[in-house]
Length: 160
Image 1 (cartoon, rainbow, N blue to C red):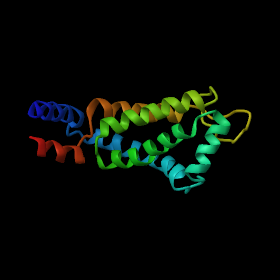
Image 2 (image 1 turned 60 degrees about the vertical axis):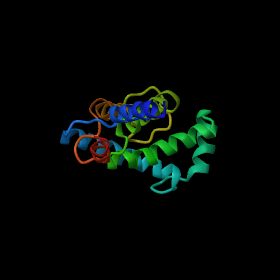
Image 3 (image 1 turned 120 degrees about the vertical axis):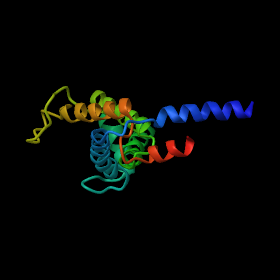
Image 4 (image 1 turned 30 degrees about the vertical axis):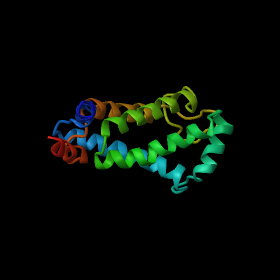
């Protein structure tokens, strides 16, 4: 029985990490991870204009009604998920997590506008054009996998 369970888990892991050796997918994965990492670092580390995790949790709860534990999950997905994406570790799962974060941001944070608020007009709010680009890059990674130059490829070789 234990051998059966182990084989099933191995099959599921292989499906999760299978990929195509396509450099364009690698570029999409690293671009998405790099951009999202900056947002996670704002929340987790309080750098690049961010104020740290506690301030993010308090602010998101006050401004958008998002419970602190959800903000913590978002910060973890953005920070650690983005690092995993850049190195190509469980990229499908990480990209799917970031897609969910972006959908949540569109629903809870964005003010119904398409364009970003380049001129910082308070009455305008933020648009969702950035989120659409991030979701699109995430979908590419979910469909195609990590691409070339990813830890997922090393894991797949070990499993075979």
